Length: 353
Image (cartoon, one colour):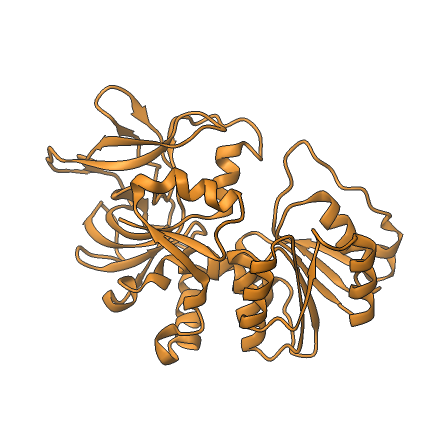
């Protein structure tokens, strides 16, 4: 363990109680770092649907309240703890929730001067953060200062990984996507990049469907305007053999499973509330239909981040920039979360720290 002194405080958005707004608090600057812990100064962070799920208690009771949130972003390394070998002070990094092959660090416990504030192996809704070394991948300063850097930690890793690693999509496949928010748009960008010609976007928001079209989707379906039985017919007419389900809606999952081709694969990315279950007839699984789940795109952060950077660096990541819908300040994070929940954000909302 290494220690140092600092009288500074920093701002952080803290989850005090589920289904309530985050509280912007003054947190004491860390005074020690344990093995494989790294203190970073956050530059950008994205607001992912997983954090909104945490706030709303989608997976059930939260036993770690109060705690910090956020799991994707870019940052500068300020201090390293014992046994940190891959990074040094002054490096720039992307923060990701999927670990690499370095040993896990203990989650840091913060204080506001009176109470303890918990955290995980990576948090990013704060000006500073103590992050486990295995949740950090070194990138250049130029990339770290680019807004798309924040998306490398989850949106792109998961969105691209679902296509590349989970479904192993080929350009001859025909793909449908339920939910074209930030993650769904990332799916489309990668599908377009590898040459897939049939991409069906499904959502309840017409503006999101229009944006999906500009990024490469050539078919769309508005669930708010048309009945699901018509969607099933469209999926079958197009011969869709791979479906990405981002919404976590049980009725959408059932519809996708029933509609996909007889030997097609449904990949579940969105997570239904813990008290909801799907109902399907399993006979088709015996004849080749498959359901698989994605855990962050089954990604290797260090390997995949560098792979995607090389693949999209031409034209200064122009293909990725439409994913960023809005950039705001930490003090406006609750307003941002409300806008996301009300489908007012067409893409990813970033916080600039």
